[in-house]
Amino acid sequence: MAEKNTINAHLLEIQRMSTEDGPGIRTTIFLKGCTLHCSWCHNPESISPKPQLQWLQTNCMGCQLCVAACPNNTLSYVDNQIIIDRDICEACGICVEECPTGALEIMGQAISVDEVVQEVLKDKAYFEKSNGGITVSGGEPTMQADFVAEFLKRMKENGIHTALDTCGMIPPFAYEKILPYTDLLLYDLKEIDSVKHRKFTGNPNEKIFNNLLTISEWMKIHGKPGELWIRTPIIPDATDTEENIAGIGKFIAENNLQPNRWELCAFNNLCNDKYLRLGTRWIFEKYDLLEEEKLNHLTEVAKKSCGINDKRVLWTGSAKTKETKISKRGNEPQPVNYCRITGLPEEE
Image (cartoon, rainbow, N blue to C red):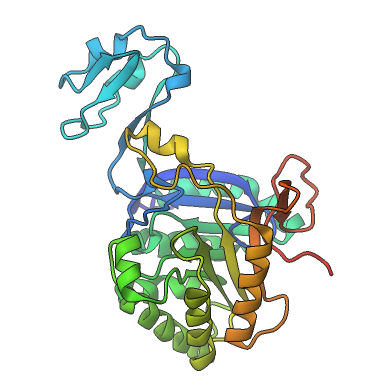
């Protein structure tokens, strides 16, 4: 009998039928814990490496069984709301078990490589038909480098395309463990100005840009990863400036990075409820989608500054048109009619 692999990770969730984290239909493994704390983060539940308790108000009927069950007096019921004292909550899950409506949920769990491999292999047929695969994301997945390296290795042994989604804020040795088993690297370059980067994310950007140069050399020597996609979130009143996009483009050009794709990821405001479930507020909650005209303009700035004047540079996501309609950029539809398809440039 084969020995079980006991490397564990702090898992947030396994998301199937994803079309935004690489080519084709993918299964994305979200790990908990991040080295950055982006003010616009769309997955705030992934920032802390620890399990967290969240409350879903729409499911709550106010029975207060959870309040009575909590062994640490963490919960209280005030003005028809469950209040969680997060300084003492241990996310033990006792309140979750007592809740009859599923209004409480633990975000995050320990899971082994073997368990994730077994789960993901169920989706192999989808990968083969769509030229898809798996993507490891977060949070920052390289914080759990041993787990990610072993998992990606197992995926390659099963003939599955692999992608790593990283913010770049990590010691280089972590990448050396993972990159040999990575087909596609999704790498965030958020803000060219280091002072602004610290303001928006909690850390300066020098290590992130230097790591990308190191990885670029690694790719030339080892041939792995085979593709590089750079992604820049376009956030209103933050990263959505010509100066930022032109600065990142200049960095790409001067270092001859030649990414297979540079994606300007349009801001969306769909994550506000995630913050409320964690008992906090999102500073971007009142911002609307960006105008399509502005995204088109920033895409032209990006093309001109990096010297790649073709479909490798594009914006993706949703935007407002002048007619106040929603415009979406994305992949050509795959044979799954209930997926939201985004990612690849439209045909001209």
